[in-house]
Amino acid sequence: MFKKLIDENPTVKKIADCKEIFWINPNYSGKDSWNRGEDFLVDIDEAEARLLRFAPFIERVFPEVKDGIIESPLTEIPWKVISENMSGRLFLKQDSHLPISGSVKARGGIYEVLKLAETLAVEAGLLTFEDNYAKLADPEMREFFSKYKVAVGSTGNLGLSIGIISATIGFEVTVHMSADARQWKKDMLRSKGVTVVEYPDDYEAAVAQGRREAEADPACHFVDDENSLDLFAGYSVAGKRLKAQLEKEGITIDENHRLYVYLPCGVGGAPGGVTYGIKEYFGDNAYCFFAEPTHAPCMTLGLATGLFNKIAVGDIGIDGRTEADGLAVGRPSALVAKAMQSRLCGCFTVEDARLYPYLAALKDAADIFIEPSACAAFEGIRYIEEGVLNGSSIPEPDENSIHILWATGGNMVPEEEKKAYYQKGR
Ligand SMILES: *Cc1c(COP(=O)(O)O)cnc(C)c1O
Picture 1 (tube, rainbow, N blue to C red):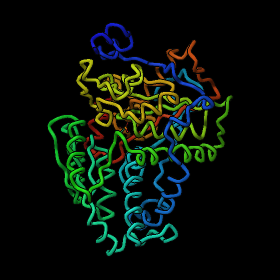
Picture 2 (cartoon, rainbow, N blue to C red):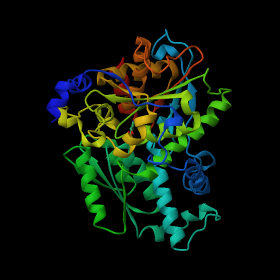
Picture 3 (tube, helix red, strand yellow):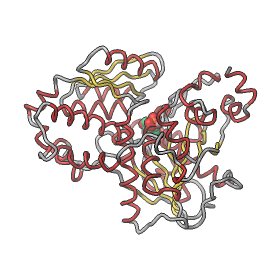
Picture 4 (cartoon, rainbow, N blue to C red):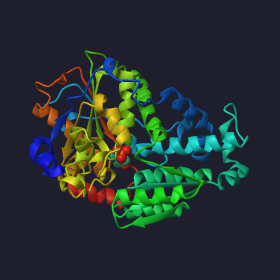
């Protein structure tokens, strides 16, 4: 079946050959034509209100988090990092520097665990929405939470985020990790009292095992990277926060000042949730694109074939191996693919070797370090500069456009590894 698909569909053929491609989504449509009935919706305001309720708790247990709000800087960076031929303004959304876990996963992952803690405490009569949530860090509350378990399967950064926040709250937490996860992430989690189980197979195997074990235990909550609406809601809050940040910069997005956003994609939850939020707040004036490695282009494949999670990169003979460990995913989330079908402008793929020069250029020009996965976003600008949008349904950016590279991770990478990545880029 997939052999036929490769033979008949030139896009799939290029993906199967691990060629770099820029795919424009033919189903992209304006907000008015979204099918809101069929489409799932998350309530961004509700999620934001929950994060605000937790702010006193976050401030108590992580004093370094200003006002208890987990948010990242939006930083203007020089065009020379990518190309001198582009105009408009270029920003880096530094989720690489989100507090607590140093990646975009500090949005969705932490949100889901906080919501779980709130639900359990409210059901037990130990908490009301009007309370000061700082009390959740009291010893008797930790004692209460220690009766419950959290489990997650992860390539690394989701595990870090879920592990750290769960252990801080007092949950008994297990992170199921694939072999390609970095050693320092496993070490850091273990140092915080998290149980780390390692799998020789890929990410999907780690997730499947984690899910099986959790399902057998009613006291265990499994954080489902592929299907969780809570994760998605946590990510989507970024759209609302971004709007406020741009306004602070004096920037209003409208039809003459369009927003172009480039987001690295693994299973899709993080970039999908962020895109969902961005489209809610900026509507048709925002154009979002996902970046994937040529060896793990699961969302590009799922959307371009319309098969969503019914096709994995292995089905067309791709190995899924990439140095962009945060993006090493073979099968996309069905939930995210469905939501992106009408909201996402397109996807592009990047060879691993292109990531490191961007990493070094950013370090040199702006003294900011981000991990290789996060650098995948940069390639979107290069494609657009080449004219891939010319003649498409998506307008090309101009001198009034705002571009945002969503830097998804990096700050927690140990110094030694940072140096090695930088050297490689030079
Ligand atoms: C997880 C992650 C992504 C992608 O998020 P998904 O939800 O898997 O699509 C991108 N970059 C980094 C650094 C990540 O950790």
